[in-house]
Image (cartoon, rainbow, N blue to C red; front, side, top):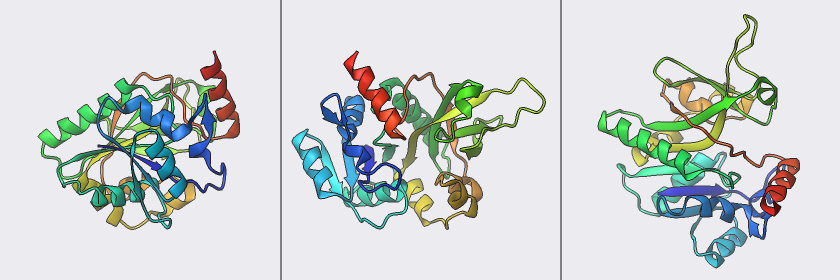
Length: 239
């Protein structure tokens, strides 16, 4: 199942998930991108979002307003929906209205592979190549990986530091996939100090020595992090 966490309150961009993009709320644009891949549910703390989901034919789950992260929210939603430990769950951020189906499918295939390998902990995300100028954007999360394609670190800062020259940069795409058992385990882990410093919840897994398998993809999608991003998205839908 694909679960889209949709929190209305935001310190940077209030009601972002309901922002209009070409006549549809952002969260619905995102849901429409992936609805052919699997069943989609929207997990929210807002009755307004519940009504919007219903209007556009999507399942929704009303969750607690006290969750610290979107992952905690989808874990509650998965429990309320009665998903089983072996079920695959995709956490797709509501601010990804341009995400390609092929990207999400690549993440799903990696989860299936890890499950066949009987991995104790299954958590998958993805990234693409970016240039140095793009890497300097603090709103875009960067990632570096090891030889086994597992994440070493995520940061809003540019990584790696290009002291020796010839550095390659990779931008993280806001998709996570788990099986239900691993999702529940992730949500029982204590917060990591670095998680609160960077404001990146995925660092919790690395801090607790849990692997995040990373899939390299080709994507032109971008997340809507700022009002400037929203204006860019609106222009794309008008062309």
